[in-house]
Amino acid sequence: MNPQYFFKEDLGWIKEKKLFLFFDFDGTLVPIQDNPSSCMLEGKIKSYIKRIVSNSLADVAIISGRSVEDIKKRVNIKGIYYSGNHGLEIRGPGLNFIHPEIMPAIKLIKNAKKVISKYVEQIPGVFVEDKHLSFTLHFRLADKEGKRLAKSIFKQILSKEFHNMPFKVLKGKEVLELTPLIDWDKGKAVLFIIKEIGQEYIPLYIGDDLTDETAFSAIKGQGITIRIGRSKNTDARYYLRTQHEIYNFFKKICDIIEKCHKK
Ligand SMILES: [Mg+2]
Image 1: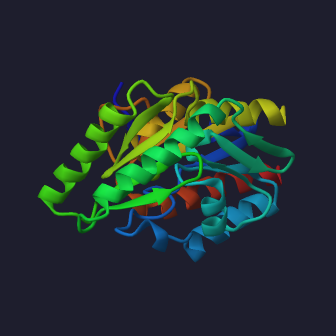
Image 2 (image 1 turned 180 degrees about the horizontal axis):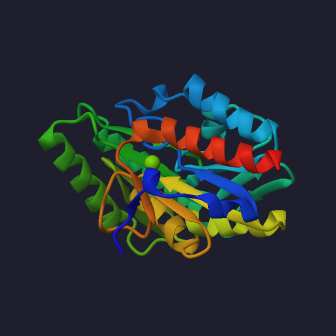
């Protein structure tokens, strides 16, 4: 089914239960930037989230591909949940989780990172981000030839020197990531958080990338799923046209949940 434009929907029905808002970070709460180390949560969005959390209107989690330490630093709001490395690590009120099956892969991923970095860091506009449990190869800033070369080195080194190892490659927007081979993703992390907290929620998930599709599928039929950017190839029920519409999203959601709260 084609997703519907979010602002055309009347979400009156969400009054029934408390909402749990799950947000991806890059490309969702903040625009994608050439240099991922320069993204910080913008003041207005931060105030919306603080307003939601401090009035107990909804629970909030940020589910990012960055490391949990990194994402916490960039958002810096107390009382919410943070999940890094696409769900492999989760921290928040009463929750401190790291996936128990990652250990065999960690050392190997570090080795692969070392070898791959040595070759790709010569290419202008290409760099490697260490996320402790995984790493990301960024090539957004490279020219066409640089992108091709970076991807090809990444692939070749993995297939020659790290064949059949316990890790998998995730594709994102102008990035490739190497992460432990575990049956775990953002969708499973969302369900895990809700289960651990043990309350009845309507989950709402909003994201912009392929890895967010696992969350759209996980809560399909029981919550609100929103993709940033219109596409037919998505499990999301709704879409926002651009990342900038996140401001209107917050306005609409705050209006609805504040009204419910007054009753
Ligand atoms: Mg994203």
